[in-house]
Length: 272
Image (cartoon, rainbow, N blue to C red):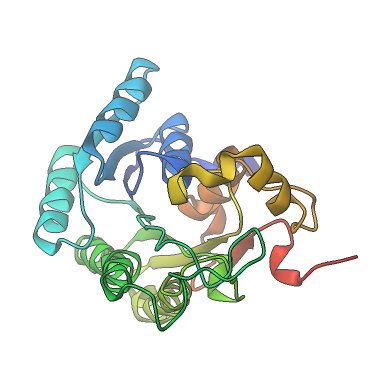
């Protein structure tokens, strides 16, 4: 076998949650571009259908589905439709997540009145945990349901470097949700290894996406965040594609329970 053939996902069946923009869309693109048949699932069905149509026009096999990962019944319907339409399930990217709003510190350098633990809106806490943690559980539960009988599968979960560092400008529930996701992956990797199912985590740092209303696309905000990154700048979604393909393919066939940090060195601390 030529080395690059290990990275092939040709003909495989993949489902990506939160796939209509940002990192999720990058996952959808790299899978489709390399021959996988992909369900792009997202709560924003208009964006999902638009991106799926764009990729189909390029000759790729992509279908869109509306999905709120916190809704267990809808999640089950989406998985069932995917398996029925694509005759199985080989790859799942559990990527859907939300930004909980501002943290206790504002990027401008002052306390945020609504981001303190004693002022934080409990409903925002509940919704963030419901999507970022419980929604991930819902996705992984269904992935295991379909993958265990076939005794194979690759599951990739989007966590964050927020699982291992503190970040005062990020809303409180994001950190424990992502830490929980990362540990859940380790637990499930151990549980599902017997069935030939690999479960790994990508832990991104700052990528320029639409999260938080796309605030990182503002040049002034972007400059302040670039300055925090040891490699000098935030990343674009395109830069996560190779790692995603690696974890989805047989190239990572002996890897499970891993958390791969891709953050330009941010979690190492600051220099200078």
